[in-house]
Image 1 (cartoon, one colour):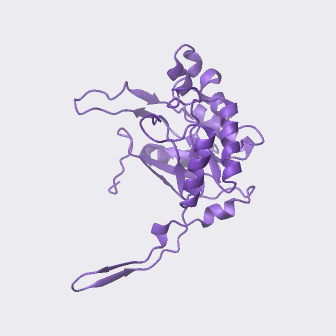
Image 2 (cartoon, rainbow, N blue to C red):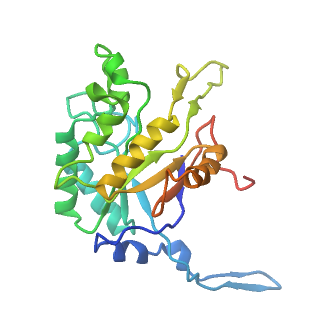
Image 3 (cartoon, one colour):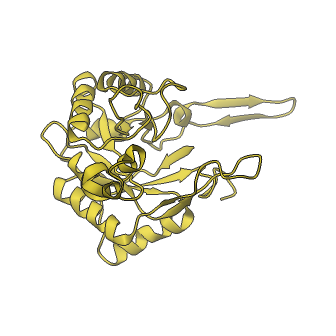
Length: 265
């Protein structure tokens, strides 16, 4: 899955922003020379500045199968590696800290606080972007640990993520704003569902709640767009006064039922 973020204005409350917006990826500045039998083409360095965000562990990537960080120390180490490689922003998904549950999300504020503290101690100049994505309502599934966790836990799909944004050592510079709904689907080679069809539901009421929570805390929204219609909705949110600058827009490509990672699009 490829995540492309447009460069957007951000608040000036954090001095670290100067480092963030001056970060330039090697690929954008390298001078490339291609020689053939008859022609020589030189590409001049780009003067455009870009911002690199690293999503260090993703949503459900299983740490028993892939080396993704789960604990606060592991996340801090991964953020340091990403920062040294040129990333300025870390997109953080909180993971269940119980043994054998590291592939589950969690919305425990203490876990979010521990992760934020560990990263800021080890990489003080890294900007933090917290996930807020939920599916369903965890309050409706108290006995189903997966559905409960994916739905925001005991506090529900909005208050669970919002609880993880609070605290003097927690407050991130940015947070994900899932900006529209999507049928989250995938099929197998055998023409069956890879998983039970999921609805990643983000109604306008939910979006408004999250925007207000971020605005109240001085957090810059990262508008995550999984399909082209969601991208178009961003301007509508502006038109009705729901969303105001500064904000960031991310095109989340590669979900089978969303926009493809295809240059023709």
